[in-house]
Every structure is written in structure tokens, then in C-alpha cells.
Image 1 (cartoon, rainbow, N blue to C red):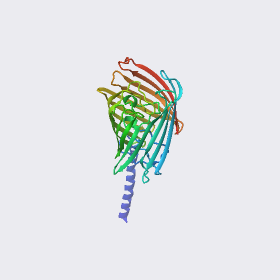
Image 2: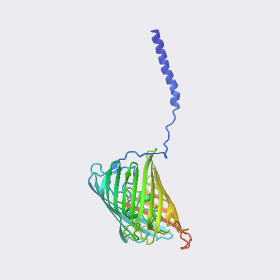
Image 3: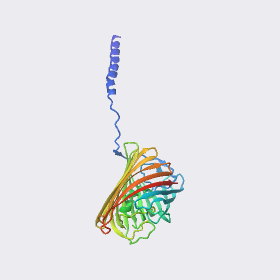
Image 4: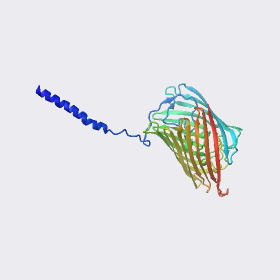
Length: 396
């Protein structure tokens, strides 16, 4: 009994001692490690959603490789979507006043795989009403924009979609960023003179990567091939998530070679992407682009360089969007392109704000400062333009 009592006392003392000595350890526990917003990891498994509108007007019909993927419950689906772009513009060179800049109407017929809900094939027809000039104020033209057929092949570990017709070329940010009905445009107008072209494309995914290979006429939509030379474009992209729950980073690289429109500091494309260029030149382009999303911040940018014939060209574009209040986003942009015909260049800075009334109506206000330098033949003297644009975008 005496031994048992001693053992009991020792046991109780051990428990109390371990408890007391454990208290400092608990008090000294380090706080949880803060997430590293710039550490990247493979994306998590994707969810699904039933589309109610056609996908965005981009080179890929599924440009977001992390967000929920389209899932079609019916073997045959028809989707219609429209958008109207009303603007008030007050610039030092533009026509001042309010006007409807363009209207875009998209119809998709989709044949789906009833087993997994993926697209198996289909047809897209997109029609745009616009003005003849790039900054006109009257809707006096109706043109086809995207118009193609596509079919998807499924193979173990890889998928491939063949597309033929008029489509967004897979180069730079234009491949994943739908901008024609926005006041802000990336580099494609000045760097390529093209956004939509006629030809054939193979695109798909392999593991974490999405790939594109396209051969097009280089003349743009709704036109015949002027010189018979083709443009070849290749692109590879991937997306990652960051340690922060809402963070994601998309990286892309593109290469283009062929004969395309000759561009100048005054080159602009209407919403349909139709080019009026009559002069063409051998082009080589390489691009690196990125899109970063984190909570209230969304930033995107691209760097493009190459040559027109033997003359080097290069430029960059950056855009940042920061949510500063409910429904309100602050916007900033920078854009610059150096042409092969020196000292010709086009540079722009801009700042503004967006107000999202609901999913269907967005109000945008943008101030832009542009500095254009013509070629030596054009005088080489810089011109400055300041422009304020107020846009109401209606999606239905």
C-alpha cells in the first residue's frame, strides 16, 4: 500500500509538472504562417456550371483554366448573347457627343457529349453592327465577326479541337482577353493589325497546358487573301493557383510569322475586327503575357517584340483593376508600341473607374493621354491627344 501511495503521488506530480511546463510552450506557440501570395501551385479540381450565354470572344472557348468549366446537360444546346456599346466621347480630335459605337450578337449551336457534358462540336456565328470608321458615330455596317465550325477529339490524357472559319487568332492577350467592346485595347491593333482572321486552328490541352496552332490568311475577316501568303501562329499557356485561396496566375507565350497588314500610329480596328489594310509586310512576332488575380486585384499585361521585314519592333501593355468599393473598380493602363519605320511610335496612359450595376449593365469612365509620333515621311513631329470616354455596356 505504501508503494502504491508513493507511485500515486509521483504520478500526480508528473501530470502536474507536465501540465505546468506545457503552459509556457502553449503561450509561445508561433502565429500561423501568412500565405505567400506569389507561390504558385497546380490548380485545384474544377467545378462545373450550365452556360446560359455563349463563351467569350477569345481564341479558346474555355479561357479560364481554373474556374468552373461548362457542362451541357442536353446533347444539343443553342446559346444566344448580345451586347450594346453606348459611348459619350469628348476628345481633342474625336467627334464629340454620345453615340452607339457597336452592337455584337452571338449565336452558338453546341453538340455535347451526354456522358461528361463537354462540347463535342458545333457552330458559332457572330454578327457586329458598327460604323465604317473606327471612331464613327453612326451604325451603318453589319459584318460577320467570328464565324466558324469546330469539332473536339478526345484521346487518353489529351484533347484537341479543330476549328475552321473566322476566329480570334491565338496571339498574346487577345487570345484570352475579350476587348473589342471596351474603351481599353491591348497591343493587337498596332502590333499585328489583326484580331480575327480566316483559316484553321488546332487547340487543346495536355496536362496543365493549353496549346494552339493556327494557319490563317493574314488579311482579316470578310476579305479574300490578298497575296496568297499565310500567317502561322503558335501559343502555349498554363494557369496556376497561389497559396491565397482566390489567387491565380496565368502565363502564356506566343509566336507568329507570316505576311500581315502594315500598321501605323493611326491604325485602328472596328469591333468586328475587319481590316481595311491594302499594304502588307513580312512579320515576325513573339509575345509573353500574364494575368494575375488576387481577391480585389486583377492585373494583366503583355510584352511583344519582333520585326517588320528587317526592322525591329516592340511594345508593351499593362492594365490594373482594383475593387475599391462595392460595385466600383479603379482602372489604370499603359500601352506603347515602337514601329519599324522609325521614329514612329504610339504611347498611351489612362485612368478611370468602372461601376457594375448588375451582371448586365456596366458603366465605364476613362481618361486617356496619347502621344503619337509619325514616321520621318510623315514629318516625325509628335501629336498629343487627350480623350475622355463614358461608356455604358449592356449585355443580354
